[in-house]
Image (cartoon, rainbow, N blue to C red; front, side, top):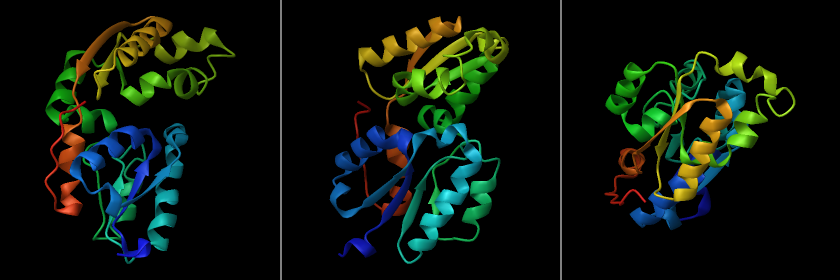
Length: 206
């Protein structure tokens, strides 16, 4: 199969580690092309749909999965995909809901609406994407302005890496919030891939 006809995944860069693990576990990583968009688009979600649209237009003849949830686009990503009826996206409103599963995420939100969520990627890159992304490195006094209504940080972890948990704990400490860790693994991401690729993926969540 030529590279131009391989199935395509247009993915958020924040999912790179997890998506690669899922594709390797499935045994189909060699027959799929993945194009990663910058993870920091989450700080400017209005740019997600236009960049996805540009890639879809260039690859219109290929079976394609968009490895984004809504991710703050306010429905614009779904509106775009109505023009490409053969293209699907990942389920959920954001990666927290995708990884944790809708019932677990809604339960966590019901327990404490004032929750700031982390995935492995956001925990590891908290300084660049959150602290610096919000300008707190220059104006740390704005922390309470941004996070004054939050009460806790919940890390929905994909791996069992203790360094990720430590990074989550440090992030919570910097924000002045309580910390909780809930391991959710990769099963829900793995379940979403066969929607397009019709293959059985088994993964241990590590």
